[in-house]
Image (cartoon, rainbow, N blue to C red; front, side):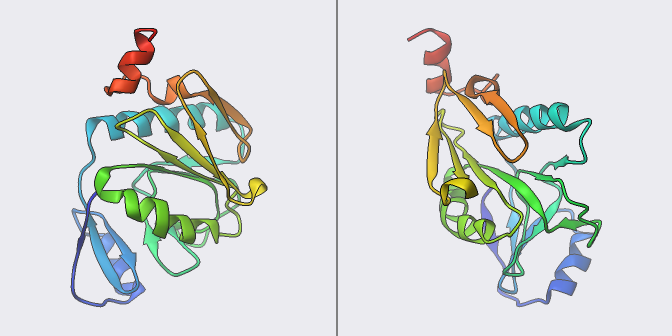
Length: 193
């Protein structure tokens, strides 16, 4: 989702209080707030596909998946809205944000690519509980997984392959992530090319 910068510095407390009543979500980084714009149809479909798979798999576990309305407080003091996160620890610091995710997922947009692949990557991999960071392209079929167990090196997955999410012990075919998504890669895969 595109971010729009506001010039006024605010405290984390002011930010959190404002988010309770704001109609538009904002991320908070270095005392600045950034309005979050709406997402595309493909973005929403991908997010729902993944969170649905996570939810079904985690139903009988202490782990809980959260969609894009739950804030994440990073070790830098930023507040982000990851597209999906899973928390397995008893994360009771606050009912409006989480601090102990085991997996974070972002669906890329052209306008968020730099933030998701650089800024958030650095912030997220420095969260002590995090085991995996997943970046999902929406315009092509490409899922990148960064794993703590692999020294945060990236591994790419494509249609016809499966991804094993170590942090929650779940394997998902890439085709399930892209179910009902409209892009050239998905059309070619479905046509058997």
